[in-house]
Amino acid sequence: MDINPSNRSELYGFIARAAQLGDVTGCTIAEARHADEGIALLEKAEAGNAPFDLVITHWGHRGAKDGAGRKIPVAERLLREVRAHDLCVALLIFAGPMDVAEHKKKAFGLGAQGYYYTYGGILRGIERVFTLEEETV
Image (cartoon, rainbow, N blue to C red; front, side):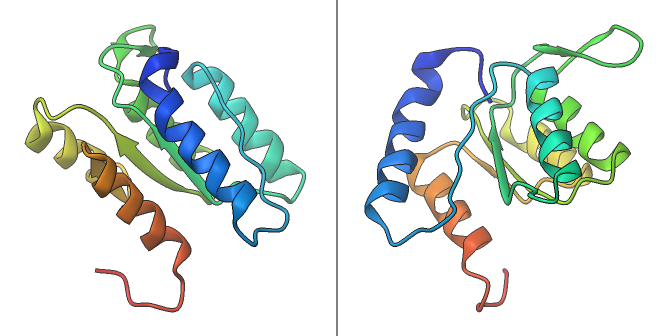
């Protein structure tokens, strides 16, 4: 999830092409432009017994609002909503390298499975989510 198309287009395009080329059946990739849209997609999928396996989002400084209307990071809003609605989905954050230590600590505390700022990192994170036969580090 990222409101800026240029930030997500390269990674999204790569993942979509990999899914098309690979031996993947039943693979659905959905895009959401903002947190509320993403949460609605997750809830609908969960209610239909077809939950998403993975969410990739940006950090999104002050790009979402909490229940009191305060601006908070998109990733924080998503993680809090996933917890509040007891949704079963892995969530990875693909963000810039600024303030990594601070953001990563908060993200992991809220249940994120990874926080990455390089293409190599996010691809390893995706692989880690879908390689179920290995132990997770």
